Length: 498
Ligand code: AHR
Image (cartoon, rainbow, N blue to C red; front, top):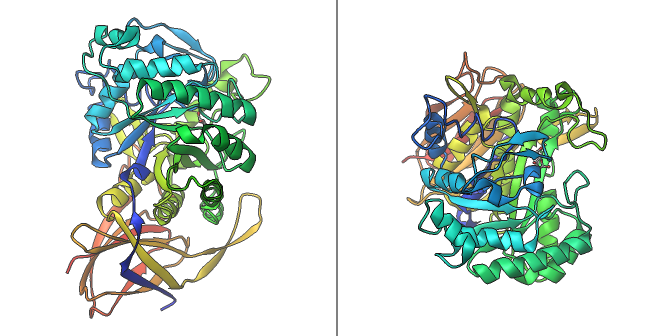
């Protein structure tokens, strides 16, 4: 066999936290309004949430959802979205925001999905006091005007929001209220101090990146207050005309997917904080979102130049097996780093570059949705040792026509609660099968779940919702070695059944 893997089920790498399959929703385009929250739709429940979307998300059981941004949050004031709502102009995305979806609605959504709410605060134009007042509103039983405002808004019991992040990408010139590393370390310290004085039990993160200077200043000054450090990852930026990477070009992005993780792991180790502070990859997606003329210095006045183009994010033909194969490789990376990366949030969940496309009459489950379905519902929580004894390689061209050599196979082994093996296997090659031999550990019967379409460019859409779907086959072996043939450009899970 050209590819062979050796699994050592007795050697546990770590237990993954379900929060690595987390989600992110932002007040951008049709993610919230006309996405998850559509009170006027006949398909929505009594609280205004699309029932079909809730049902689809329940199946992938996000353990945590991050909200309200993203760039949006850096000029968002939470009081405008509770009690009597204020209709304002959102300076981040340059649209009117009626704030009908606010903190209470977000917490209600998380209750429906049985997941943890994770609130990202405004460290752009916001203050330490405003951030800590938000913690008061959510978590104090009744003390002070903010908790009393929650009660007056109809929520007698505290929302008990346990996860909070200070800021979003405040290191970036595109962000409203961008900060220098020194300014950032001070603001995070003072904000964290006040937030934890309101509720010392909250878990706090802060916006960071894999930059040593930014993180060392942040950790040196604010490290004692932090439980997480947040980083983001987008690989294929769509350019002026939503030019997305081809399947081959997308494969090039799968090389060194753990580069940022290893740098942050090193910084945490060097500062002695590896045990206390974990990594939250709290925005990630193969594709950057398409919003031309939004983050530039000289923004246009013509909405046709900066609002209308956002509809191109809803072009389902862009979400193919490239997105599925990349996302599976990224989730495999998180599983391999499960002791340091304990949260990750797909950006975004609905519409845009999301897992689920929502239209007036229903939804479309994109290729990436099925990757989450497989990884959450088929893999085990214990990551065990897997040695890639042999893997074919394949050469691809990246988006800039550079040659990149990558492994054809990307695999991670897990052990389920019933002690059976479940192995994630990705065949990245566009035009050929991958023949793989794996030590069977006495298991003579296996089930192979394969996510695929007819071609690497297959995608799901309103008129063909199952072009990309999961198929199952059973494989028998002698108990010594199980041999599988993985289809081209496919995401697979191989589960031992006897
Ligand atoms: O493109 C969407 C933006 O990407 C998010 O709002 C921000 O957090 C990231 O830069």
